[in-house]
Image 1 (tube, rainbow, N blue to C red):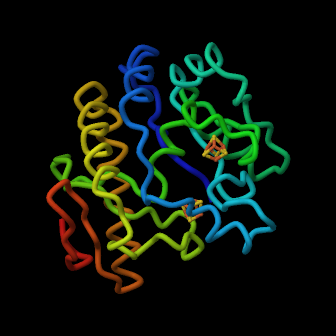
Image 2: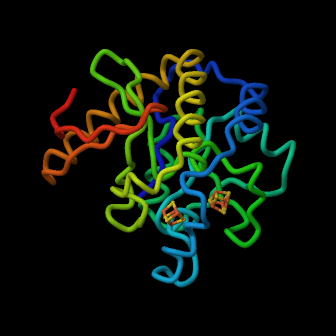
Image 3: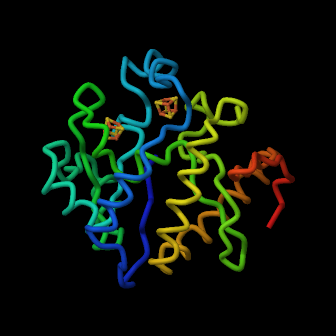
Length: 213
Ligand code: SF4
Ligand code: SF4
């Protein structure tokens, strides 16, 4: 399972280092108001699932990675160990970087990547590419105990994420397209599982039919 945050091919990246400085400074809030790593880490040998590259490899924008290298020792490039990992990196757009951090015990939280900040959520768009809100990410299946528990979610987090993705989509149309397509995958997944879709906005959340556009 991997974070695919920015896997478009051959398209220009509009976000630059200064944008990540702005994003990191302004959108720091976490999905819940307690340390959710304590919920899942005991099930995974003491490591929170979303901080374990055996489950998810953080993918970063090229300029995000270069910004991070100038400000923290937290990150290096991920070194693939298996053929599967090598294939994934080779097949992914060269404007993205797969990262490896120092691990949850050495996390420098103000320099966590965008992909770290959003989990277990992702932006949700309709077929026309209109940003509708945030939805759960099912990239870890049912491993993340926060998923499908909407009452736990911090309003500040949703408000911050809504602003952050509005900022990103206004500057990067390719990223809008990535998440438009990812939202189609989410609908397919929920349709197969016959699960409802929760869409979070600063006004609250709605529980809709999985076929919702
Ligand atoms: S977001 Fe989910 S997987 Fe990540 S630390 Fe929190 S509970 Fe664990
Ligand atoms: S940077 Fe922090 S939040 Fe992100 S994967 Fe590493 S330990 Fe987890």
